[in-house]
Image 1 (cartoon, rainbow, N blue to C red):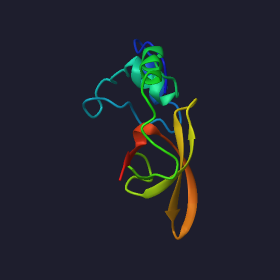
Image 2: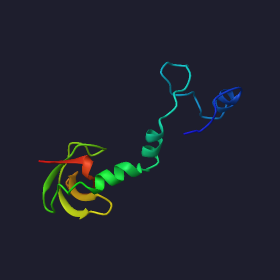
Image 3: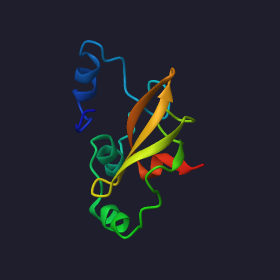
Length: 115
């Protein structure tokens, strides 16, 4: 990611950097489309303070030992069992069977659903 004022020679300078092919945008070869601040925060792992406060009021919808299905991320579609619940981080440790071996995954509440 680059934060820049794309005026004057700056787009040309960025495109001339080794391994830079172009910009992501609405049309091929067109002008780049800036990311919204919420998108940047999500990629950097930052969360809006308002959404943290809203999440704090939500009760934990899962219990230890419960079977859940992963609905988001690289393990989408896998079933697993909740081993640990981290209320502070709002994360679950889910044991998933991958290639015949049990593997622990740390997932958010939003990445799983009850089976």
